[in-house]
Length: 191
Image (tube, rainbow, N blue to C red; front, side, top):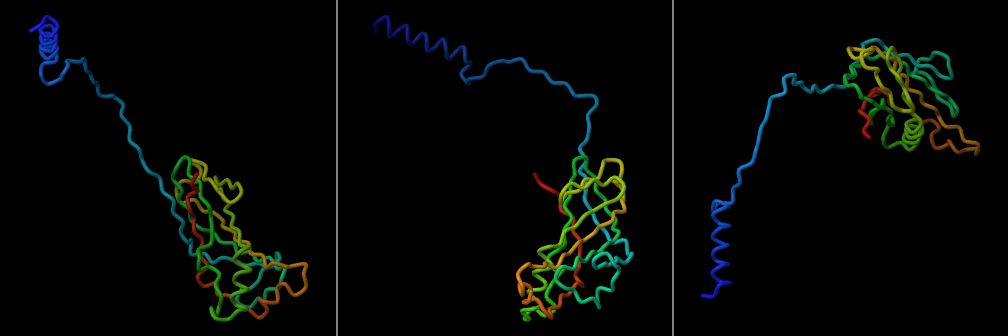
């Protein structure tokens, strides 16, 4: 064997011995428990009926919704107190009507369908009360001000569109809607 081959074999053997054959190295390692450990608590978002009947107005005057005949341009307002529990320091919620809140009284009647569609697309909701701050369609419960069974006033405003074009709303003439499923929901706002 020549000198280069012998030196290569000796070097390889030396490296294998240094690596311990299994490829492990001794390293320094230390750990310590943190004395003041904390916990993470998830908040929640709940809306409940207060069992107090809501009220309806049309153009600012009290009405009985079951007997009121809506006309283009009318602004209907439903006001109800609800119990909200919103625990979360950065929690924001969007109030909305659920899908079955305003539906055609007769699903096969074109006028009923047209009226339901006109009213539903204009519905907006607001929430107010101690510790509730509303910005646009989102409200925030100020931490500590309303985190336990906060009583909020929820207001739904529904406008029957009035077009400048004569006859534009004729499709909904004599239409009827069913409001028995009128339900408010709160959904956490995501980024």
